[in-house]
Image 1 (cartoon, each protein chain N blue to C red):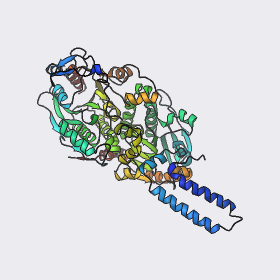
Image 2: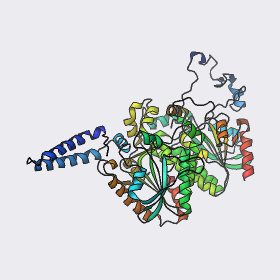
Image 3: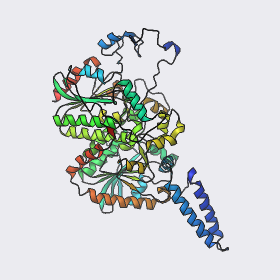
Image 4: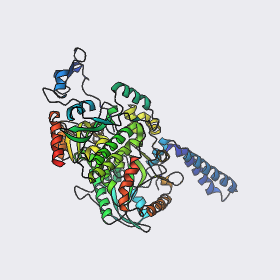
Length: 279
Length: 316
């Protein structure tokens, strides 16, 4: 279940970053357009030229999707306890501490409540930057609790996924988070409370094999990688090149696993419309 | 039975071979006492060896090619087994088997992942790696069990869900997620048994239930030691360290509170005596069924939410 992705860009010398004033400019990984950061932000981190959706975190999604000032965060400081005393090339505790320091986030998901065009919802958004958006005990528990919040308050649930899958460093504990979150969603569904799953680039592995694929309605951002096994693993297993567009949002819609592909600019209104029609 | 010998088992096989030789000539020579002495030594050595196995050695035992598989256990434990086929939607997945059977006094639905024993049967069984239709077949059988109020027993033994192009096209992730969702709510008891390899989501796809049992020499984790090594160490060479780090054996998982009970295997592993391994499992299954059938169907769902809700360690 890979949680990192080797970027193919920047391999050839020509594709190296050009000398640009520090931190002011971003290059679109898809069409190489140079975009000023202010402009990119105003365009909700999508390319002005080709509509490429840059990967963004929970902070940005909260700003884009929730009514200003309505987000009330839950379990903000919950953090990993390293149940296996795990060590690979680095101690897991050290990896966690460094990531927390670097990102100012405590784990790979933020949860809480907020309003979307005036409607109160339970909300979760993953951060791919945090160890590949991997799901360990903290992500599983926070997702479970936000599902319970929706269940108790009888408010719709929206989860934004961005994840490489389950977190290796917590072994079987991570795997069990798939079961934990799915069983809570089953209870939510019995209570007939709407759950909208939003898949962003990338949503793979255990996250896809649990809550991301269990929505009443599935929304994906354009061209997001969505799947169970990662493309590298599949290429190795089948020994052939993968078809173009394989495991992208548009492919999933064609195969029947995604309902709607929504541009980030329309995401809030799309979610809001679906929620209103269901509740 | 064909004999595949693992590296760490070699000293014992050599001693046993010598013992066999001695027995053959013992009619002519007076070496009875000598033989008894060596027999004792072999037994002692075996007990020590298998008690002190490393996690990687357990992984090797879990993959032993002579190990009993799902259909072996079904044949040895049950009567009147009727195998059922297909997901009623796409096809019959040969890596996932299941059907109705009589286990002692219980009429049950038994479902499990099935490996092959040689190249030909492994190709037929896709090495025990299911496609989405395998998980959907398992779900169909579970729904059937629910309809007729039959307890469900699932057996986990897979190197993973199949990572193929078509598996993705047909929604491998959705199939696994759907099973977890539906198994939570199933209104009949579910017993899970890990009988070999429990590789990640592919295993868990039939692994949500009321009791989780694990045979002594199995592994169950979020990733195989080899893949973990290749990702975290960037090389396939660190599988032993990865196995240690993942803490993926039955005693580890019992301590972590993830499994409920370890089912003892014959000395040296289940492959040494299929009948004994199956008898042990049968006895434990009957004990567990006796308890589970007393639980009201309405209580099962909440019980599973609570059971899996407890799994996980974090600081607040």
